[in-house]
Amino acid sequence: MSKIKPLLLLLFCAPFAHAQFTDVINSNRPGKSMGAFSVGRTVIQAELGFHTFREYHTISEYDVEGIGSDLQVRYGAFFEQLEFILDASYQNEVYKSRTTFRSRRDAGLKTISLGAKFLLYDPLKNYEQKPNLYSWKANHKFSWRAFIPAVGVYGGINIDAAKGKFDRPYYPIVDKWSPTLGLLTQNQFGRQVLCMNVMLDQLATQRESIDYVITLTHGFNMRWSGFIEHQGFVSEWYSDAIFRGGAAWLPIKNVQIDASIGANIKETPSLLVGGIGVSWRFDANYEDVYLRIPKEKGKESKEDKKKKKDKDKAKKRLDAIENGEPVKE
Image (cartoon, rainbow, N blue to C red; front, side, top):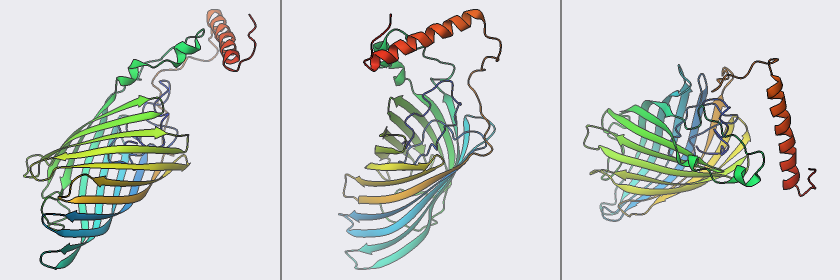
């Protein structure tokens, strides 16, 4: 969650709802994936995290311990589907070599990137699943339409922020200005949200790589959710597979608090990371955007009134069946 991530497992369920905007905050934290949907036009969202980490390389025999922070600022502009993203990270670490018995401290910005995300396809747009008024089973059966994902694209520029800091073998860092392109998908399976990202990172450089993230978020209730995630890096410079897990809590609709832990599966280097974070949304300037134009009031035909009456009667009958009450025929 995503990242979808987090507390919104009812997200985008209703086709009559707003195109991008959700009633509660939709954060990419605490995972590393991005959802396909934007925050909504005129909405500003900040996602800040702090983490501690330890790294050990069995062949080069060095230890690194430190702390870091990451900030993502998201802004929806021009179109409901468009979002601009500023991503920055800071790191403070102590590097110790077990072969030379030397150590050094490095601190500074690790990465900066500027990019934009655009929603290409929303499977629920202009689609309305009509309920079966006479069958509870038909209304609760699995929908194969859930396998059709929302699809977004991302494009951005990596900026060489470290400028030589954190320079050690097999380390994923930007060494010059370079572009990134990405494909983002998002599926809703009841209380679960599945986000998948594939990124072509640092194109046209020695550190060019194919990165991917798969995040599955589960909503326990309207305030708590948990997630598991797998992230991979594939390149000649650095390859790795990292697994994460964590939880998020929604104290109020525009604030999310999260915690997570992650580790990789290799020893060149091994990596252990734990962190906490907070996401905040400012949506005072947001105006509702509807996917369909609502019917005008006061122009309901007799036929519409009769259909509405029949639907109300059928709904009462279904409610009675579900509650084990006697049904009046």
